[in-house]
Image (cartoon, rainbow over all chains, first blue to last red):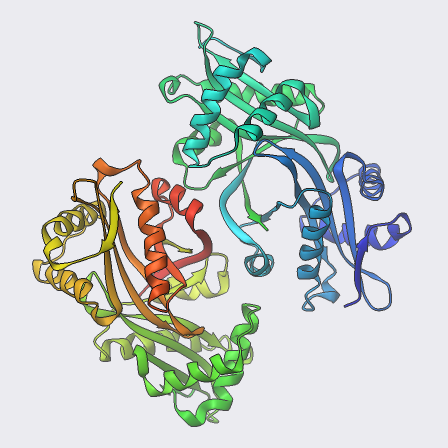
Length: 145
Length: 145
Length: 145
Length: 145
């Protein structure tokens, strides 16, 4: 694969397509306003947000990682929450997801937030087989209210 | 039970005892510097943090909730992460945990962060029997790296 | 399908391909030395190890099972640990996995180790739908240190 | 707490009591012959087995760990299977279990088997809260046949 770098404003078309694929995976719909605002914040780095984009050798966006750095009660350092990770179906099987995870870990550490966490569906075997290799499963489940 | 209110600086002794019980539950140890810094940030409301304290009729602290409001890619509104919840063993069985969860939900909404989430050990039956009642389990598990 | 029999030294090419597919499934890499040593031990039956190979009607290896017989504190008999099971993708859907499991059960019993166990990812639905039919899930999860 | 050392033949009375408590926890029954044979093998170190005993300051056995070192297909080194771990109820809350786990890890490494694993019921919160701290949960569940 090509490179991974910080998301930029002229990545909109590539990022929009990846975000759309990601939302479709979760059968979710979001307003264009929210999508646009999220992209803006990821590019600007406001509210602790940052985005990474994976590019193929031709410079096309093939994977994205959207992150939020936030405070934690367990440390004076913030931690990095990887909220969204997506690799284009056509680009799978080439370790793009793994490279994105490792790049997120480094980018979080660069922001003083070396502890990284994320959520995944317990039944998402494809994703978890990667996560088990690169990260560590915990005993924690997520509740909402 | 008595009341639930925002954590204040003169709650240090009560909060410190609850925090110690909470860390002991997780068999964890934190430096005094981190504990003190966390308390300060929860009281000051810096970095999106806030704390709630449950008091008995005599005004003693019997439960705590430590929260972080942070940005999300899925909404222009931030969400509320309930990072720590603890009720003193002697005060259990009187719905203090439930009252704290409901108060956190309201306090998050007051801060423009009505979506609330938290993590719990999949095997923590006592806690989950409450969480299932007040909140909703998701299919998400937590990974770390 | 064809037959299942004990792994032999001249099965190297077939076994090597299956082992490679198996490692790729786990996104794992092992040195050639370790792979070769594992194959030798499975063939020689040293250290309680044995291997089974499933062959199609043309005599090509289409599935493998690698096992370790080891002592147990719960019985004077050892038990059989099925450490690796793999069926070539092109051979799936024809009960090769099931036949291998049943052959492992018999081969373990022949070695005085009739109790058989194995580990599988909780999220591996394809494998578990077979295991639930032929074996029994337990409430045990695996920890490492 | 006192010390942890290798199981010896004159520990029979202490070990027998701990083994009985352990079996009772699992609502299991074993013949005296099997119990005696297991103890003998743990002391003698036959079939890769070894036992550790935790003693209080008065020299009474308060915890046990029964282990089996066995071959693995993934490495030329064997691994250590911690088959049974038990701390007397009266001795809990003093990190005996944690000390036993760490001693098992060291004892396995001394035998050339540094990778340690064990099974636990997914709903055993008391045990898992310790295991999550000292070890790592995996995504693996156990099947039997």
